[in-house]
Image (cartoon, rainbow, N blue to C red; front, side):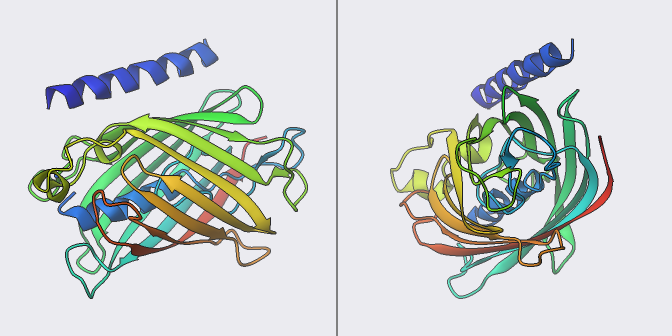
Length: 286
């Protein structure tokens, strides 16, 4: 517990220093896995102006298991529904988790903020936790974010009652253009955190695999068709592959599909992931 608190303080201190300089055991392994993908999409829908000279991320999903450094410069509300099959504690069943929230701010001048609430047991409308993500553009076509996820979880049903904290850096490669003018077709993220990025499941510990993963996560996303990305992700504990699709030309609806638990840590069997998200823009900062 003491090491977790110290690491959380270090992470928060480092990134808040950067931002200030620029402007002056889940209930079980299944709940943990659901949060891996749903929380990441909260920071995913980065809506940017194609008038920018710098190429910025396209608007398809860039990751499912891991967060990115982008939030965007629009004010919008969003809703996300995700599911996984099979659930890690039930061999023949899946389950759902939802999230809803709001994003606002200006990451060019100050920073952007995404705040949201998770609903782990969708069918019962209970088991809530919160997320808060701050993002700031730095350098050319790059963004850095600090996140706190699974916050205020009920300690009686969560193995991470203190939440998870992370720092992530994302970059949109300028030499790989998206099919859609003004955007990049290759985006990557690298980050470090505690909680779900660092601690293995009780089953891993009991089987002698140790308590800690790498604490370092990463994802890379490449556009293969217009509004269709393929993604590779490392969560700090496990490997996954996914695809992100924006199926309707004039709609911000985003869909993610993938597989994860491809290593023998924290899961020990492959699971299928599906997510669907919809951001509703309220305004756009100029």
